[in-house]
Image (spheres, each protein chain N blue to C red):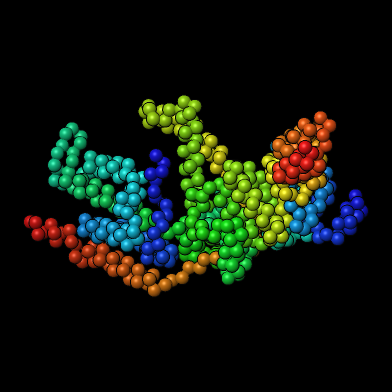
Length: 294
Length: 278
């Protein structure tokens, strides 16, 4: 197995590889003998600058996979490498290096804020890392401006909308200067407006700050604009390709309990009548392709 | 109903008192409580009340908001007063029936007790109205920092306090939601005797506790993800500085404390005024 892993590493060396999972399994213990297999022999590698969407039904192992990426949990079998460093570390300080590289934004913004004033909350991460004060001040300003919340720095987060709170949570992780951001269903609790706000921030982070994004979601429309979609089912990876390819596989997606965007459904219906649509992502492209067919 | 609890909430006005060093304010609060407990005269309580009102005016906190913070202890104040009036044994019997005897001394004692309790809440209320929880915990951490020598986890304690304070509004919101959800299912919180009402709260408390534990789990993950405890050489974003304003505030406060102590040990204003009447 080791040699296979090495070969994969060699193949990908041309593009900088940030995260690599080698035959990772994870079992949640129930008692001393039994457990629930949340991840089953998963191998995966993620390259710098990619926008990866990870989806799957409830209990498919998405969140477990996310928590493995920065060592919040450690694999039962196999290994996870971040910039070549194993998350099973000998030294405690190594795991914090990994965690500051791979930032994580969770589902409920209320449960990830530590301080009651926004700027204090954003400073919390860099403070923990021992960043000098002058640098923390710069980072707080920068992080708030990236998510477009600079005006709110002295406020308390309680009166903000869900989308605004989640943007603060993103800024708080950004202040640690990560190169990868993992969003663990960060849009799941938001209303459509808040979701659009947060998605816009996530895309701009990927494009403008060159941050690698791993976005876990239920909402398949959020695949649009992604470089790569990974679908999980019962702890295994069952799909790993571009979103437009997934959008063409209606029955497969349905089998994985994914609700594809409406263009995928129309493509599917047209396909049943023998009309083949090209592979497209956005509704605009779809409409154009449709017009051309007519 | 829960929104009326104003104690422990920040009231932002950016007044000179808001800008004082939180450590100075903490020490003032402790000293204020100390002198309040040493005082045993109406004149002294009047001075305390005057001082608190002065602070409220300078910090631009409406007196109404300030008085709301007493609401939480009003039950205790009334309870203590009634007990004292009914069962105090002293001189100058005013009225008696069966085993209940009301003495003038008892009335005086009860009113002093009530005043003391109310003033005890008002002083620290000014502290929490004018200081953000973060400043407060930073101040406490700074004041406790000598304990680090004894390996006492000063910073952890400060973080625990800060998170506890931050969670108060969130938990209150959640309580409101659960109460409404249970009411929607026909739960009745407003009728019956004390025991029945207390029992009716169980379906509120259990989901609240479960929710609090779930929150705690997620918060622990978030703390880990943000590298809590990564290095013992943690840096600080905000630094506390003892400024000129703090020095002046200290002088004012010492003057206030001196007045109270002078009254207690040398002048005895109550007796002077009492003497004038006689």
